[in-house]
Image (tube, rainbow, N blue to C red):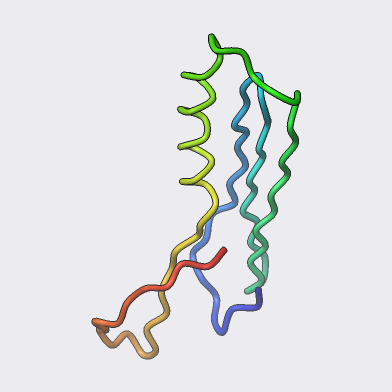
Length: 87
């Protein structure tokens, strides 16, 4: 995504890993260009009952990692508009 002005965005790389899947969301920023990259891979067709708790916890982390909310207010003016997340 090309941004209208330079932003203070930090690169971020993480990995969410469990026995059922792995997700690697990455935020990359350079010269007013923001890139959101996601790698997801299932590890097996189904999970065992003993793995369900970890799978649910990791799935919640995945949901939190799939959005990148930010706002743009021209000329530093305040805004009460809703901030739409970008996916």
